[in-house]
Length: 403
Ligand code: FES
Ligand SMILES: [Fe+2]
Image (tube, rainbow, N blue to C red; front, side, top):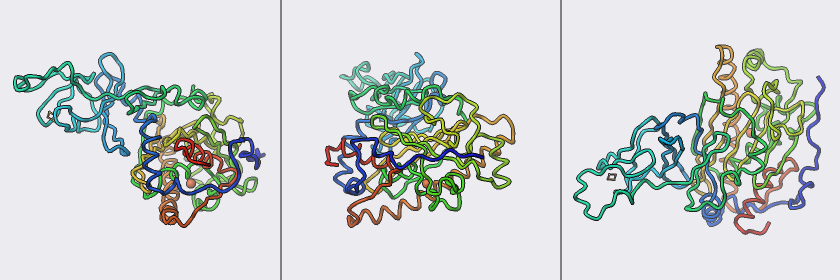
């Protein structure tokens, strides 16, 4: 079968603000720059917390940890159908109000002294209220965060007054994905763990395929590289505000293993094959409309990576815990299978994905311990590692550092 060629070596040169030279490694390990990132980037940005489908009925809620800030939030659908986000902390003396992961309630009652809050976060009842002569219940409630949705993704912002609306934050990247059937991915799977690495290295590991022929020689090498693309070049990398997208090449000449072929035929979910598109793709997915397209890796700066193909999408979310420590959450969203064959195909795709990302994670810990010594002063990015170079550029811009 004829192949479309991967992108040429000219991606970086299209962006005058970028250069091709080495970059400083400081932002990947220096504790003082990490602190600055938390203050200037993570405390100010919008954070993805879950999907609208998780709480489709009044009173349905879920609790979401925000590991970088060491507290959890309650996301709940109110009686007015609005989704709100509250800090999971009782104003009486600070206990966590909700201890279950998710469910449906008519009110939230703190287990410590039973103060009770309605679905809109207002303080509704206080046992032995007489003992608080100065307490005015109307003035007290759960601390509320700004909460907005984009394409069914619920985001919260912990600033008192967010610098941007969610729509301004997702910007062109968000608009270009409009129309993808995100809400049909109601069957979910999740992997998570703490990786001893900087959050940016985790993001990077999903944003370049230069490593695929080598690091993934036992998993996805033959599917994302091949004789027409021996070095795993991308189809294209597009920069959009602080965000960016990498379109990943698929090897149409790849002959799958027998079981792999069966699985791919049964469910259009595999990351290892170019799958027939059954949905009309939005403008921002496979923007060059390449025939050899496998997946798009869309990044919402700083730490949300949404990997999308026609049959499945999954998110990686990086929550920094320290300069060399990151909570990594990977969630996949699939259409519920119509039959057992499709379910089998989906499970096969999940396992392929798990094996490949474990290869990434192991490498990250080894490189982190080297870089954290401070002895490696510079990195050298390939032209098709433009997404990584742009992340470096964007972080430096927010921290006010020289490029
Ligand atoms: S801390 Fe919640 S009722 Fe006392
Ligand atoms: Fe990888």
